[in-house]
Image (spheres, rainbow, N blue to C red):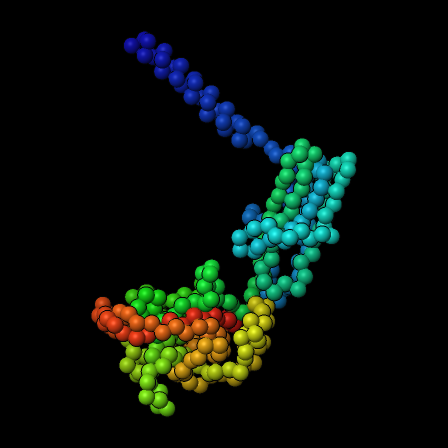
Length: 313
């Protein structure tokens, strides 16, 4: 019994020493060089109010350094880009507690920089700063590698209900039921009065049943119009200026046939106004949902790849 007690005591002392030293090391360690930005949050991020397109960052470096540089960086990934040459400084004999400013101008989207310094200890230290604008126009943001958000003219895999929130979301019926207030428009294959075959079309969510399309309760009414804007003009609309969209006359059609490389206007019953740029339309054949849990095989439909730009409310 006495022997067991002695062994337990030895183990306790050993474990205390092991973990106590680890904690002490973590708490007491202090990097010889620190990079700090004035007026930012704990994630080195600053958010600008709507309409502000400039920001002056104050960079403070504590410690002894041999060089200082600022690089452009990707605002989504933080990946370091090209050197901003006018920011580069070298100190042959080293310098202590260096401070400077860097000005962001004419911001039309979020911007990021990476500050890189070489310490006199031979180690490189770096830190990112992210400047976020408050957009007047909200852009859809397709998954990497996609030409646009995929919306279907019949629900097969992605769905035919589209919401512009959360950078753009496509829903099947089961999910659209959860977000009926957020669905802004839908797609369907419609036989227009001027034609004899079904064509891909924008369809007011609230009017889908009028055109023989699968629908769900509670969807809002949306109107559409074709614009004269080209894709390049659509692409030129920035996040900080909603005027090109706001100045367009309100749309009047509850259903509208679509074509690739065209730009369309939509306005929802709750006042949301935006543009839809059709990137690509691809014919498909597959199994589609025609009513809840009722699927039909070997049916023709289309994948529509699109981008949206919507006035922020």
